[in-house]
Every structure is written in C-alpha cells, then in structure tokens.
Length: 353
Image 1 (cartoon, rainbow, N blue to C red):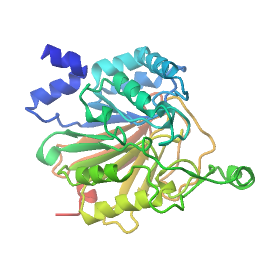
Image 2: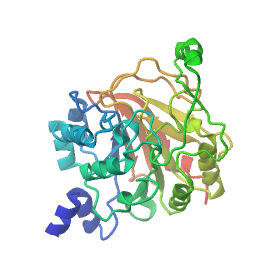
Image 3: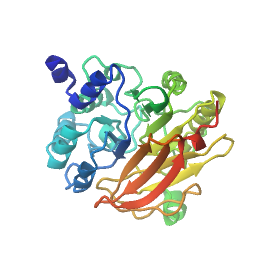
Image 4: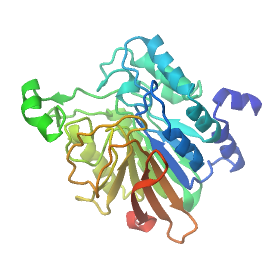
C-alpha cells in the first residue's frame, strides 16, 4: 500500500477507493475553479480550504505558461505548487485537473502547438498522474473520466480535452474586431464554416459517447470552455457547432439523465440554462477566475441572472439524504460568501426511465 501511495501520490483518492471496496466514495461537495496565475497571490484558496470539499476540479488555465520553453512551463507549475494555499488544498482534498490554452502552452492554441507532447508530460507530472495512465500516451489528448460512489448515488466526472486535437479557429479580420466586435464586448472568433471541424476529433467523440452511456445518477461534464452560451466571440463550444450539436444530440439519443456542466476560461462567472430541442434543461456554471478578472463581459442570452467579474470558485453540493436528491450550484467569492446560486432536484434533470 505504501508503494502504491507513493506511485500515485493521490493518497486521498486512493484511500477512498480502497475504503469503499473499489468505488470512490460518493461526494457531497465538489468544488471547482479555473484561471489562477502562478505569479499572483491566490488568497481565495483560504476560503476554498475552509470548505473541506470532497473533491476539487481544476478546469484549466491552472497556470499561465504561454511559452515554447518547457523549462519555463515546468517552473511555472512549480510556482503554483509552492503556494501555501495550494499545498493545503492538495494535502486535504483530492484534486483532478484538465488544461486549457494557457497551461497547454499558448493563448488559444490547438493541435498545431509544437510542444504539446512535452507539455502533456509536464502537466500530468505536476498533477501526479500515474506513469501508466492512458492520459500520457493517447494519440489525441488527455481526456479522462472519474466515477465516484455506487448505484443511485454515483457521480461521474467527464473531462474532455479541448486543446490537443482542436482544429483551427475561425477569426474575423482585425478591422472587424476593432470596429464591430470590441465595442460590443465580443471576441475575434466566429463559428467555423469548415465541415467536420472539431475540438475533440473522432476518437475522443467515440470515447465520450461511451462515457455518457455508463450508468451514473449525475453526469458532471467538466469543460475547460463554455458550452451553453451561443456566441461570445471568444473561445467556446459555439465556435464548433457540429461538436456542440453532437453533444446535445447524444444526450437526447441515448436518454442520458443527470447532466450538469461546469466550465472556466472566461475570467467572469455566470450561470447558463439551455433547453432548445432537449428533454430537460442543461445548467452550466462558469467559474473563472481564481485570480483573473475581465470587466468587458460578453453577451449571453442563456445567462440566468447577473454575472460577476470578481474572483470566484464554484461549489456543487448534493443532498443525498433527500428521497429526490437536491443539487445546489453556487458561485462563491474571495470570502466564501455566495455570489449566485441555482438549486434544483435530481428528478428535474432526469426525465428518462
């Protein structure tokens, strides 16, 4: 056992697995966040550590690497790892992580990034991924999933990789951006017009479909980019309409209950709700950032209530004691106080028998 713990260096996760007889213990409080700069103080870790969550999900931009020098990238991870608040979090709470562009290596980068193989290993080393993990060797990315709990109290966390295999973005001209987009708080990208263009690629899509079909009461899709907003002009699933529509279609085709979405990247926080041509509403909480702020918040017709551009983290709390479990999605600020909240029952997102 000691050697296993040393190899995995995920003692809390491994012990939960052993204690529950082969299934991770059911989480009641899942915390999450994104966009933390390694060269800034991250005082929000103090509030996060007081929560004593069952799991923390890093959704991407966990550092700001932005380099072609792998020694620089590794050093920036080490700076995050040296922060007292991060050390406390890692000691007390199981951590899982996906990357986004800045920890992948370059702003808005996709499959063309020349150092993605080296970056992959540096990232997975930092997050203590086992040496034999498929995430280290897959030809098309570090996507993964985790299953927690058993039976009617199972939570599956699905983490797609939206970087390693992503096709080219569709950019507007510099003139159009500065004369039309910028004034409306919109970014320089438009939905791709290339048939078959994808963030995931076909192999990952086959994997994702198989994961969605696995039995779980709650399917938590942890996306590094926003999924439900139709258009921001910045990076999002909306820039690859075939990907976005395919996910919606799979949920309906296979009658997948219990899908909840969390996302990062934006440097603002908000809740989105979407039900077009679906049998139940999809709810997404965007938590961004742990240090980063963006005041020019883009329009989002699916936004519920207001947004925040102050630092924040997310909290998904599940009340398993109720006959119909209650879910509470909260966005919390630097002091741990609730900024916005969405409460709903498991049955309200589980229409299929």
